[in-house]
Image (cartoon, helix red, strand yellow):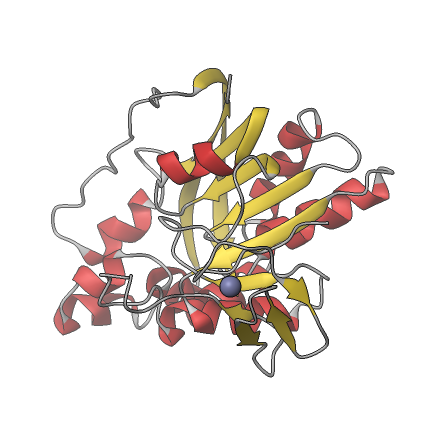
Length: 273
Ligand SMILES: [Zn+2]
């Protein structure tokens, strides 16, 4: 069981049918989809509140096509060793919750009952996450101001989401794991080559993170075959490239019905000592 804390006073929030409430009486209504908004807008300096609906919908449709199923399977296989029965897991920047919903069912099939919570700054993403009915509580919040008490989690998942390491460190228990998934240099290079005259490689961040002990990294690479223009468009729209690309370049993939591109990821495990 994981409790959100009140963003105003820091007390634990008790869940009721339609709302969350702290002992001091601060109340947060659940949305009609089930998530709760704990974002204190006066505290947030972010102008753009996360991924927009076009991106979120494209990602939901692409992921439900199973194209990244191999990454989910790999994530399950790797993280299984680090997650005990009863583990409390935070999906920090959960998006539509494709990965933690999958990981939660994988663990359950293997006799492990883990408690997940998901946080994202995008309401649109959490609307789709809530529709998965995966029994995970979701809150709209900033990763840089997580609505949890210190040392609440055995693991934090940081899957293609911003690196709020100080907060991840704070909410992890001593000995807890940070599980980070990042794209590698040539991830989606063929897709970029179809759009840009000079496609560039992705920058891969250094493996070191202050205050965390690096445990292990594992890579997985696959060629994904997209069998419709809709799938190609969805893949493009779920990437940050889409927003950095002008209309003329965006149109270059309009006719692509069959397309194959490499997908390359690394999973990095860190421990809080
Ligand atoms: Zn309160």
